[in-house]
Image (cartoon, rainbow, N blue to C red):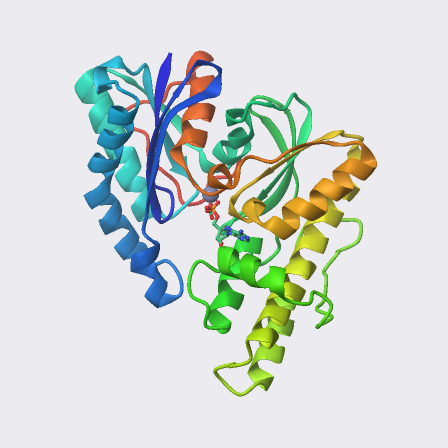
Length: 333
Ligand code: KG4
Ligand code: ZN
């Protein structure tokens, strides 16, 4: 069994071949960071145009690396949302075209289910039930996963996603796009207690909120003469901001563990690649005897292997999409 996965939900064009047992045979990700960097965020129109240019070379490379041809895959799994609609249309249109030409099945995969399935691509696979934190550029939600396809949302962000907050703070500090990796690096050199930024714990709720934090950082930054030249100050702001984000994410997961009595936690989405989050949540998991599943950083950020993994499961359960598959920008899990 071989599934060709395709993800064009945002700014990365990705294709992957995944085999039985969620084995990654190939996983190719073509990043558009260089294009969007100068704008401090993703420009949707440019993203779709680049996907059109890259989709075939990326799929071709994934097939070559997997040493197979299209006719040898069993199905094409494609991300059908949520995401940027122009970008999604490229992946879905391409997947339907190659499937029609080669007589293959198309499997539609929700991007968020893909993120959850990134945990199944590692050697140590989670068993149900588990809690899944998806923290990315577009989403920050906590789910209770009770089985394949059985996910209930416990909470979600009421404003910015965690990754979005990272990207906006990085832009404010003149650190470029994407903000997560650079703030993560600077935070390691800074003092996390230099600024007492607010943590929105929102008692009795599993929801998140990062807009107050973002505003508090903005106030500190705008008080300084621009651009900030003091590298220690930049690192201290980064460390204090990151500490506030991580505290909230870990506290919410911990609260869900207590309230729901669940002993397994899956981390996924780009922000899960964060070293501060990985360290703090590992400490909490050790203390509480929780089994923690953290995909390697490259599988936390967008990739088609996670789409193929979720697609593999859907294909086996006969969940096939028609050639009328239409992606959706807003698509709850
Ligand atoms: O999952 P992802 O690749 O795409 C979406 O589905 O949104 O997540 C991208 C987000 C960006 O906001 C990026 O800044 C953030 O993940 N990110 C990080 C790190 N690496 C990527 N945030 C914090 N620390 C990181 N190391
Ligand atoms: Zn994503």
